[in-house]
Image (cartoon, rainbow, N blue to C red; front, top):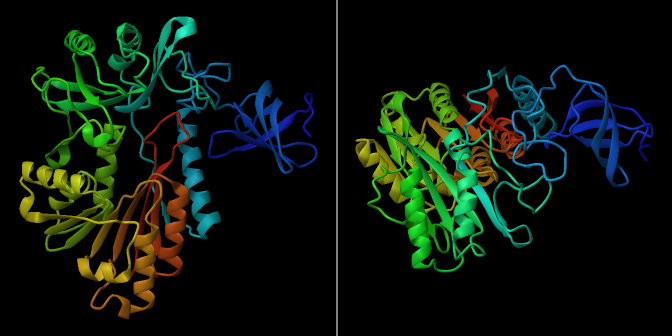
Length: 457
């Protein structure tokens, strides 16, 4: 058991940005707020047989990478916002930590080591969050409404007056939004606001989705309309699931939501409940690098698995002769086709919907061979897909006439599932992991995005 007066040496950071140390008995201690290289005393919050969880209580030796957090709501104090976990660590060290997490996962979980480590993709570290889900709660006892992220390890909502990772104009709306919700008849039945910022020739377009559990009164609808007119907000209403989302007033004068990939002359309209990348600047660099690594050329056929709205499919179509985009939702596939038509790429793209978590080698054969693949799965990874590849490589009769792609570019939002899938590709499907690198999509958080490249003869 760690004594309150014992000094601990912090060796590393874990996946939750907690310092990792060992006490005098050799037990692992995870320490919120501590950084590698620091000497600390802690307050233990939880004890288990092989580990303890603690909070930084006293700093004896400070890391050279410790910095002053940029947000007044960040910290270890009661009520601190849990939206960010790494603001006390220099951003360059954050990126290095995420790169280490990626490499450690690849090696320890899959015994895969990339031949070349890619330079991390970095970009804006403040005001970058163009998508966010803001919780809403009317606190009767305090006679106020809270709008923001949850407190650290709590279901309570942090009392936020500002947020440094949201765009400045959105941060400035937090207090007015609290007043707006507090004035509404439905203040008890509005659990969240979903933010989506898009781009238009006139500038940024800010949309807010109101998730409401009960029908809104005429007075509340007018309150939203008046607030939108005053602050330039495009309101959407969501009474039930994501498919029920609709504009409060399609003629409110605000442009349609879209994001752009100027390098490829691509414009992609979206709804605020659609999946789009949080950090538009990083996404542009991510797409640029993915296409460089994919190296699709005229005359080649490419398959984009988990294609979404066409974030990679459409730029690839500017290079390759044919791109097949495959997604799990008929709705998304329809939207992808619309985006392809808008960008003049209907003739070079094809989209299909299917369950990507249930695939067999015969399914690969049905889609035909392609020289290159782009794989961009959700956090669950692409296990069924890579398992089908491995099975088809080991038993070609399972996928008659099919040949595996010579190159796969895998974009991941979970290093653990990337490592699992990389193990199958390398050890069972005959691929080499030629490149891998971190993508700092979410600065100041412990979230690790990454990219890896796999090649076979």
